[in-house]
Amino acid sequence: MRKLLLTTIIVFISFFSANAQLWLGGSLDFLKNDTYFSFTAAPEIGYGFSDSPWSVAASFGYSTVHVHKYGDNLIDEAYTLAPFARYNVKEVDKTTFFVDVAFEMVFYEGLKAKRFGFHPGVLFKPTDHWAIVLHVGFVGYNDGGLPEVMGDKGFAITWNRTLPTFGMSYCF
Image (tube, rainbow, N blue to C red; front, side):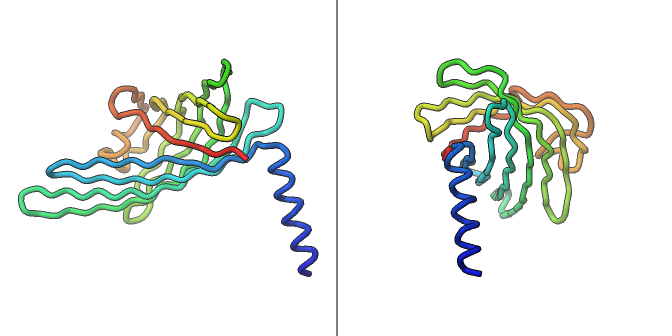
């Protein structure tokens, strides 16, 4: 049984490392001022299909917000799950322009918000293994579950409303 398990692990690792299509990465966001503290960690795992502009991935996030106002200390925590498919639109040298087709779910005291749409972005790959990722907006539909986080219910286009998100990935 151990030999079968070891063989399966070796085949699995060699399959992913030979194609160099698996990536691990994510983003960290941090904001602090006199009345507000916010921290988000969103690790991500993905797989790019050989000889195809398509990839599939998922991001799992944790956010905490602390608001110190009028003597109160309000603390909120949320978890996110965002499976997505990435389509590489154009590749120029070490830069790739892409669009993520994502279904995001925010869990805050139970499932509170969902949105489906497109996240355009840019990926810069300075080496064969490291990539810097920038998402610049969202076009899609919000269900209105958490308007302070994702916007009101209905069709949404966000470009300058929030800051772009930065992340890094390591490609195997």
